[in-house]
Image 1 (cartoon, helix red, strand yellow):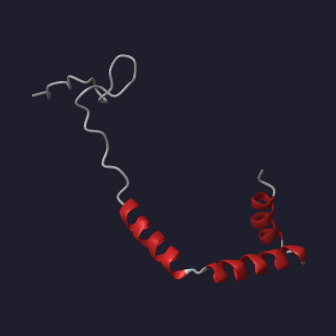
Image 2 (cartoon, one colour; image 1 turned 90 degrees about the vertical axis):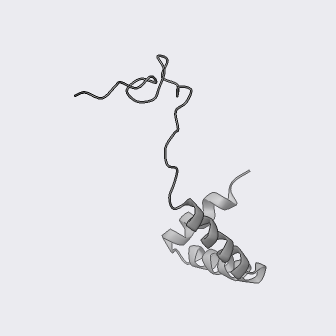
Length: 80
């Protein structure tokens, strides 16, 4: 016995391709909460002095020809 077709179409969208009324949407990102917790922990742990030391080291490495360091520094230093 075949299942009754969805009133919202086969994929929950209306004729113009927009999500139809009553579409419950997806489950969302299951990792978003953990990423938020980890980001908060990082922000609490890294001080302004830490950031200054890290950036200084990156700039020094870039000056010495370390291409990955230059790729981190240059785009951020040239944004207007």
